[in-house]
Length: 188
Image (cartoon, rainbow, N blue to C red; front, side, top):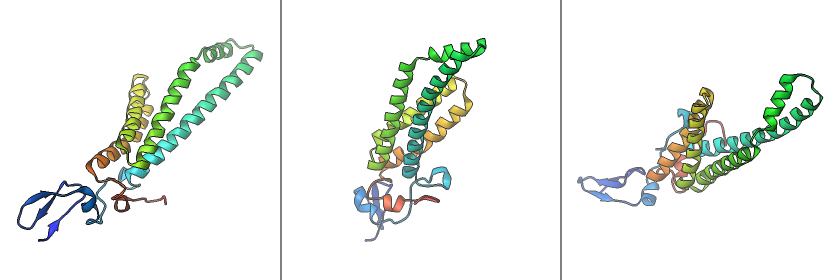
């Protein structure tokens, strides 16, 4: 009897209409077409998108931290020689910046985005979910701060994480199925 098998369904349907359970890895070798989501409907598979976005976010957090640290030193030097009261007020605000809170939040972000890269690389949905929650927290904080751009940024970066998590849970994205799910418009 001939069976029709797909990777995303949890059963194989035979010609006579009977339905039976079939294991995911066995089905994965029968279907050779992409079932998973393509990020932005044209770019790349969501696994690759998650890795790229999380690496970009790690770089942005590190660059932002280095900029803030070097900027604080420059402002401190300018305030020492400045005669303008506004410059001195700005320097005082920067010197009173809660650096401990900044270090903690930056560390949490780096760990969460690192987990996202690890989760995508090793097919671990829980780690991808941690990065997704970090982006959702970023979105909520941006919304409460009135930053519409930050809110959009958080949603755009969260989007492939949700699809990757969903595909890994459904068995569409796994080490066995990735050769069929691999897609990239511009990357190797």
